[in-house]
Image (cartoon, rainbow, N blue to C red; front, side, top):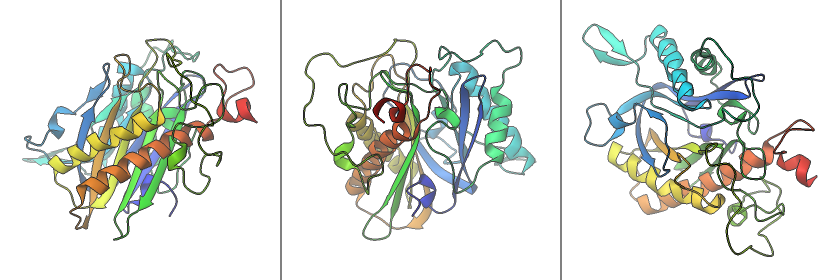
Length: 319
């Protein structure tokens, strides 16, 4: 087990970023279409092709999922992925043509100090590049869609985690953390997700000895959104994937304070790729939420920043 979402066999993740832009794209894909659902709980989402993931819609499987920076401009990353998939002969068959199905979600990183004065939208090319980079092993922290992410007090990042259930069902999470709130408690190094940590994956400090009361720390109202994916090798319908995505949002609430605010576009996709029979959807949802909480903390823990970058990364702040 890599402790990555790609522990779910068949999945691959690719990143691309532009350091001057201070933004990037992350793509999750596989060799064959996979069943997918989505649930949005933030008040300011930016999405593409999410309506077709409703359980009553015709298309039940997708070819890739895209997480991107860039706010609305970042949705063009999905066009780059769509073009690359078409070149590979992938997509939903409609007569003599195929149409790749590529839902996407974006976060807002336009005010993070990067050079956003482009003449040609860079996200199409970043999407195509991220798709081409997709593999089982991938970077965490300052990578992909998390490259320019921030939280209220620390640099954000790209995180992932996984776990295996007693019957061999695997659950994994992938997340770009760009939250209005904070992943750490007060001014200290302890993560809100500490009770769920496994094998010292984000520092092994345990829970905070104290918890602040009153209004939580937040950042500017227009610079937010945490977007993620949970996946499993359990065989699920699109309706069950939708419920899994809903349950996984508990992981946001466990790891980010506050979460699901009017100024976040918090969203989770859920993917099913595999043939494991599994009836305990309650445990599966809990596992997805636990993986998501751990992935959020790992994304912050693994992020890196330059000496004068604001906000600083976790390692620079608490080293």
